[in-house]
Length: 295
Image (cartoon, rainbow, N blue to C red; front, side):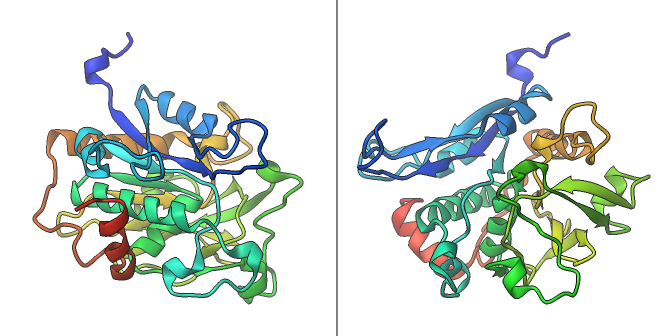
């Protein structure tokens, strides 16, 4: 029997950006905010109501709606994949123009993570979302894995031709929450469409899966202690898994784990005093308070 609307979880989905472009024939010189269809459908497959969380600032901004309002209203948020993270967000200079990323989206995403963290609501990241979460809490990234990660057997983590049909193996770390979700799985096959990745892991997080054989972090989770809210992420796109397929790791346990955390937080919210202070990267937070959180 279908769930009544009132019983369904309301899950936020961070926006992707297509910045104003005077050369674009459609929506000429307009900023677009959008979501990729498959990730919305992935969340909806378990009965969740999906809401894109738009950036509240920009040249057309009106009203007083804040990201903190969405964090109060929604039950959790998923940080979308997409553009590179700007190296300046973790204190580095881009090594190539092609790796400059999207600074504007970084500011929005960091503010969104901060809002949900302070509200004690669960956060799940996919691909860029994992990288952004790691940066938000003090970690750093490889600007380009092939160029910077020294390993004799470096895996090709992105292939622009095969795109979501590029795959590699992962090893799930024994004793982690992810290992408990997949009790019979030691290694698995996942899609891979990224060229940036975790270099220094954020304090308070643990690695739950590594790529094989080059050992780049493929899944991370915040340590579950001191009443901290749920934060987890995968470098691969679980929403790209084909239903019923055995070719890549089943996405269902990951989805149900996140939604279970959202349902639990809804019943017993963890709104600890100053839950987010001192955790989100300080430099970014100062900018965010001015630009997005409107405090």
